[in-house]
Amino acid sequence: MELAYKPDVEKCLERVYAWYEGELLDRPPVRFSRHNAEYESTGGGSGRGWATLKDRWFDAEYQIETFIRESESKRFLAETFPVYWPNLGPHVFAAGFGCPCAYGEVTAWAEPILHRLPRPEDIPAFDWNEEHIKKLAELTNLALEKAAGRFLVGYTDMHTGMDWCAALRGTQELLTDFYDDPELLSAFCGAYLDDFFRIFDYFDAVLKDRGQLSVTWMNIPSPGKLHIPSCDFGAMISGKQFEKFVMPCLERECAHMDHNIFHLDGKAVARHLDAILTLPKLNAVQWVQGVGDDEPILQWMPLIKKIQAAGKGVVVDLTVKELEPFMEQTAPRGIYLCIPTESQEEEEAVLKRLEAWRA
Image 1 (spheres, one colour):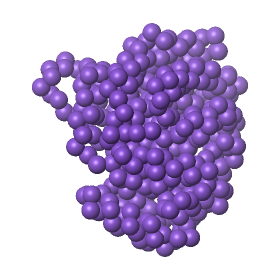
Image 2: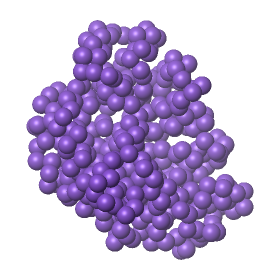
Image 3: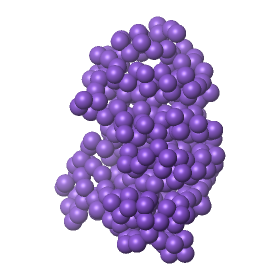
């Protein structure tokens, strides 16, 4: 593979592929960005005269040209890959079932449509002609036309499982469903799987036909099928409920893929870590420690070491100031760092230090 925006892409991919296998080459992979950095830009472009924020999100030419303009002035060091992924908010998969999405500056929210816990036959059919799904295809195809050996094109952020249920049903309503009709809820929880596999495989085939890798918002490419399983809703349910309602679907999601990195969003979800680590095809966990009292990262070293001890990789956010004490307290094998930096010089200094990191 050759990318004009990243001439050293092959060597960097070697490090990533070794990391998936639990191996360490010359140093751990590092992305010079932090989690959710892609959601921090407002998009600008007010001069284009959009009537609504949704119109800005749906302006395919603008979205892709903005990415290209920003990429042309940037140097992608280490395992920071130039990736355009179609982004219509985290609930685009739910939109395919009829959920309206409300758009803000940097994210979007789904508006529930199911006012009672549905029987399987009452769940709306996935609509391939729904506007969000059609726009994903437009964004993907336009990006592939413009990529031309310059950058990677990925797939969108799709929240599945219990997060999908909450999008369609509403969070408070879904919580009461656990007690009102757990058996019907169990059927609802798994009702998305076949449609998820179809839409994932469709876009994966489109990308692979054009020589692309499997990559999305986490910016970690895979030569096979990469999935980012998650369950933010897990923060609100017990361990027994997680085991009964969430784990069977996670196991099926992961079994369909070649590589899986679980998005573990905060300490409330982390109480399910023991269960998550038993997923047979799980390669790694992305630990998102949160802000405020959940910083700095060093307080979470026992959790990080627990993931490593289970033979899984860990994607972790650090500041530059935290790098030295972090390296002193853990081993490099299995670590994938995300570090926000202020300059190319700072990034080069980080790389030099990582090259000297030994177990």
